[in-house]
Length: 328
Image 1 (tube, one colour):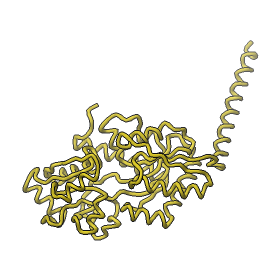
Image 2 (cartoon, rainbow, N blue to C red; image 1 turned 180 degrees about the vertical axis):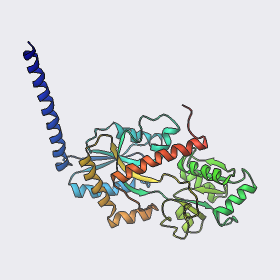
Image 3 (tube, one colour; image 1 turned 45 degrees about the vertical axis):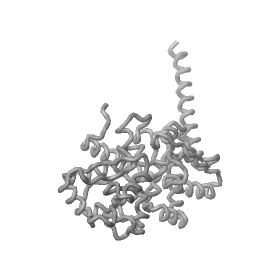
Image 4 (tube, rainbow, N blue to C red; image 1 turned 90 degrees about the vertical axis):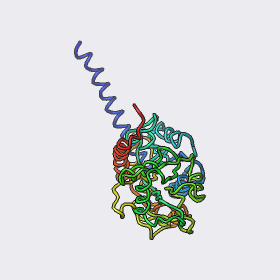
């Protein structure tokens, strides 16, 4: 009887081992032949902006390289959460990627409930650019430096107003961290998008603003850039120092990348990452970044994953310190 029972057990074990080996072989083969069908890139913000145009240029490059269609879909809503949720739910086969930036990944989950975890539910594939944000004031204001502005704020608590794209945005978090580091009180004026905040600054309704789109206005003299948030000086403002150069240790998560769902085969991740980084070296792509006033900072999968993890921990600590996390 024992021998009779043992035979089906052994047979089932052999079938399981065989199935596992077959799946592993199929996975290895799929990396060699990948892609064999269209790839979809989900952009979680609207068409035509700095989050949309870089992946579209990369998609065109990948189409030529892989000889397969690469379709870009804009799935907006929830400040980027809707599109990212679709990526998290997709099959981890490399055929669905999405734009990956800090606001909906390492900031939004601390302000409200989202249906994903930035570090557990995604596979960072490659960083493709970096947002760079100057802190600007009007040229008619007397402040020539961040130190000047902070001195004025210290002497006039709550009198210095600044605009951002909204409460809980990366700009808002950075400015509040700056205020805490300088032991000053600033007045936040949130808008539902960048255009309103920029108009408020240029119209003299607020004293300062932090926004990537202000670079073009600073370059033409419409406003004065005091410093820029980013790992390097803003490409359009080479004479403006970064906050790091000024000795500040606070920072903002400014990366833009592409990611897929968790569980993607490493060989496919490596193949996609290499192809995407190759696309970012194309001269037309670098020209696009200059036009969009984006920083030319890229990274492969491992480095990008490490950056996301580090910024996730850093933003958690920063937001907790500022009391900006939603109650659990």
